[in-house]
Length: 295
Image (cartoon, rainbow, N blue to C red; front, top):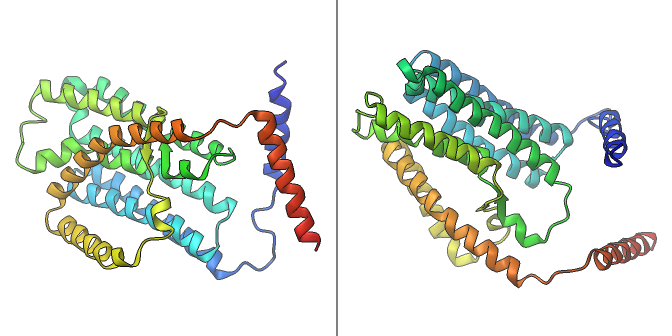
């Protein structure tokens, strides 16, 4: 019998027995991040409806709106110190619907479900949705791993919100004037392969920039330029949505080799600590923390 299984079963029973909240009265600030998550989930479900009705512009807008909300709820939770196990589980379920199921529905109804591509297109979008579920499950498990702080600036594989935006690149290109994508069998073949490649990127271990550490501290002279860049991006997104999304997707894909190279440099510069020494270091830190708390 695998010796790991009993430990996993005990951990599962412990988590199931853990109360969602430890107090009878819940502060309102604990609920604020969940409101953003539920609003994003509503946007993802609305995108599925718009895709079924063939209203692809609104379906795209709903997915982009859900991605913006996904970038807000976690930061709001950290600012308000309102992180909870319930919020983390709800966020994972919402991400699967918003960035796994909704883009798959959009791609299938847009072009991959037309004519002779119906069965193969369904397989490709199903692979994409399943890859997003596997990516989220791996991300939740990896939260308990001890890693150096600098590794927080990198994701292992492409995150699901980014994958949902990037996989819809053929839809953006069509709205820019290239209207022959859906009518060309060769172009639809390219879209099929592209969808599977993005699904592979989600479950791969290729490091990609996360941007988490960028929100900790910035120099004072960069505050105003950062505001101007954010306002300019939002203005471009509203005025020229498809051109802006196309440029953002191409820039993001071009940054993946850079992040991979940078991650390799950081790994090479990080000293390797033996497992025994690491365990001793953790024990020393815990003893010191206990001593300081007893004082």
